[in-house]
Image (cartoon, rainbow, N blue to C red):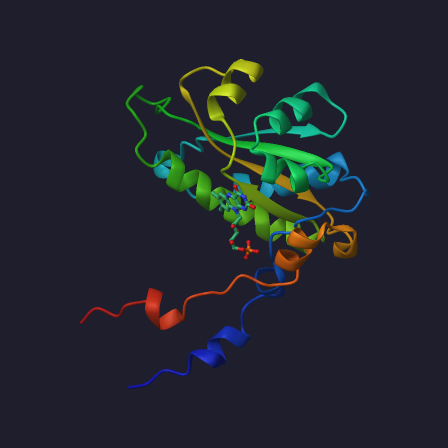
Length: 191
Ligand SMILES: Cc1cc2nc3c(=O)[nH]c(=O)nc-3n(C[C@H](O)[C@H](O)[C@H](O)COP(=O)(O)O)c2cc1C
């Protein structure tokens, strides 16, 4: 039987529907209260043995840590991420506190937590743009993070800015929304 996926897509909550990764952020700052609400949402995610392996190191623009995170980025990312009022280093504890064994699910769990965080952020009108184009070794040494902490990604957080202020190449990208695969390509029914 053919399913009408269009009907179910309409039921998607607005926070998921509207989300995208901005290439420019507004100067408006994020309050610490809103940031805590966002991280609180992340804390509600499920995790293997309820280990909650995720660690979010956040830095406001103007702080030394913000500069260190920015410095670690490839120049393309630096160009847009430097407009964000807050940068977050997404990381995870590699080992279970329970038995010191390696937690094979730490990245999976952290990704889930980030998903929760993104939805709560959108609810507050705060957008995120994740980036993997940075040097994790540089971040580890500049922030003095132990090897037991897995450095996963950096997230730029803020309110979306005016794309007319972007240089031409970025403006072009900012005006196009990323495409998605059809639901039928990613959801495969097993008999
Ligand atoms: C783990 C991860 C790493 C990413 N790395 C980069 C990056 O280095 N530079 C960049 O501009 N965007 C980066 N992105 C953003 C993706 O390109 C973007 O999420 C994807 O194209 C979908 O677009 P949307 O978020 O606007 O829907 C990254 C996203 C994730 C989740």
